[in-house]
Length: 312
Image (cartoon, rainbow, N blue to C red; front, side, top):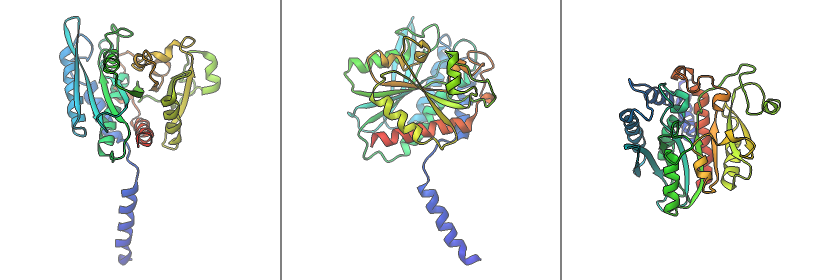
């Protein structure tokens, strides 16, 4: 029996070497706990806490990207920061993947939106360790501030500032993905609500899936990403696609991707559907222990695999 051990070991090493990279659920948990923790809440009033989180994001991303940038801007006399890590050719057309790190009021905001930022940090690790020699596009991972009230849907949103900067510099943008609440799942019957009641007949009553949210006529990037993302359906979390005209279902615009739609860039949102499922939304009960990190890791892994297949 002993003589077969070296052969078995070689086989195991080969299988490990060819295994596809994936997000780590325990690392995601660590990031969420750090971002959601602290004595102060990371809302627009507590700039010191927002800056501390911006520094954490920068330090974590810098482990994997040598191309970091901070976009500072002033709102009502206070200085705020977007944090960006880039991968791929410097002058290539860009794919933006973003998530906001601020919260609404005095709450931890684990799902909203420490989950999305943790996803960005794991994507930084995965893209940083990937072979980028044949990439045709540049990927910018951007952590935004001031997505939440009182600045939501204003020109002071961090994502609005970022999108305007790209437009002013005539940067070619291929597409944008907003990671907006990606960690809460509920397998119970009737755990999922919808902006239109009739949708339950088509999408089901259980909050056990992740959603790609697009507007009708959302552009080539949104269509291609959706197809690639669903191709990896076997990875332990079901994907459902919600597509509608914005004027009929305004709730499809409720995140940072709306600021890229303003410039007619192809953008979409990846979400667990927010308050249509998670009743902890904007409440003190939105805590790290309520999230499903295994399914969240599958969501992030699928983003990485879909984008990796699009950039080469």
